[in-house]
Structures are given as structure tokens and as C-alpha cells.
Length: 241
Image 1 (cartoon, rainbow, N blue to C red):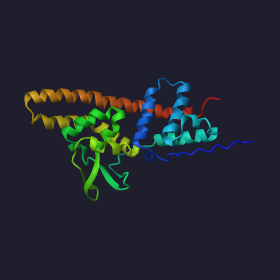
Image 2: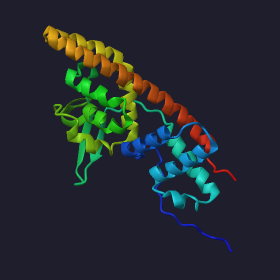
Image 3: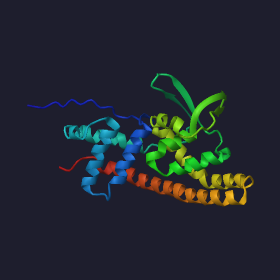
Image 4: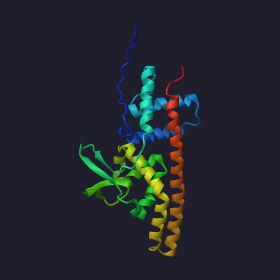
């Protein structure tokens, strides 16, 4: 007698269907797996189903092989989508009200405080929602493609909201910011040096250089590791026989 397995799961169709919070959880799983063993690949596959489709680990064993492979292929396709810069997106809150968020209109004009806070969080995937709360804030005025956003009041204000933002928007912003990072560091330092005493300058310069070296370099390494892991995922779709 054939057995029919019925499971409720939601399969993401595109990267924008995956929230940043889920992507952060997936990154932490990747970081916790050492090596490319077959057992590690199988565990990663099951965790991908759990995180992105809401399937508990114990339930993943009940999924027919053909469906199992097909679902993972779809997830892999989503995770490997191109991530162009998306500067504006709509966010629906728990009160069912939609608010349009916008990225800092011109990152060349980023403030020293924004940059220091951003660089502190951008190298830590556990804190990436805080980095996004610095880069993105509600739009207060707009005309055509031009817009203004709320003044920066610290990352706490919108960090919780950014956990639910589309991963496609977050990754596009991260890649763009990384590419601009070296130019930004020189720009913000030059701007700030003119307004500080010698003692203040030494303290801030030391903190800034340390943050830049750790944050940006760590982010570059993290992107490389993620790229390697994602290109490996489709090769280990099916559990061993």
C-alpha cells in the first residue's frame, strides 16, 4: 500500500521571499559546519528546509526523494540570484501598515557616526539587521527618484523591523557598501579630522582604523565563504542512499 505524506511548507520562489532573519540563521549554520563531509552536506540540506520552508528536522525524513531534491534546487536557485542594489522597499508592520524604507540617498555623504556604527556591525552576521537599520530608514519626503529619510537616531530604532526585510535588498546593499568602503573611509576621516583636537583625533583614529580593519576585512572574507558554500549546495541535494 502506498503511503501519502502531507506536509505544510512554504517554498521561497525568489530571494526576496527570504527574510534577513532566516538568512542570518542559515549563515550561522554554515559557519558551524566545518569541512565538506557528506554528513555535513546532509545536515545543511535539512537545516535549509527547516529555516526556509518551516519543515522540522524530524519531518524532513518523510519527504519523498523527488520532492526533497526539487525543493533544495529551488532554494539554491534563490540563494544564488544576482543581488543588484535596491535603494527603496516597502515594509508591512505588524499593524498591517506599509512604510517605504530608503537607503541613505548618497553614501558619500554618510556621517561619521553612521559609518562607525555600520562598520561595527557589518562584519557580524548576527548583527546584520542592525547594520541594515543604519543603512535604511523610513522615507520622509520624495519627488521622483529623489527622497529623504529619517535622521539617524541609533540602530535600535529599526533593528527589529530589519530582521524581516528581504534578503535580496540586504545583500545588494552590503555588496554596494563593501565596494564603496575604502572610498568612504578616506572621505569620513578627512571630514572629521578638521573638527577635532589632537587628543580627540588620536582616540577616534585608533578606534576607526581598528573597526575598519576588522569590519570591512571580515565582511570580505564572509562574502567569499558564503559564495563558496552556496555554490556547493546544489551538489549535495540528496541524502545518501
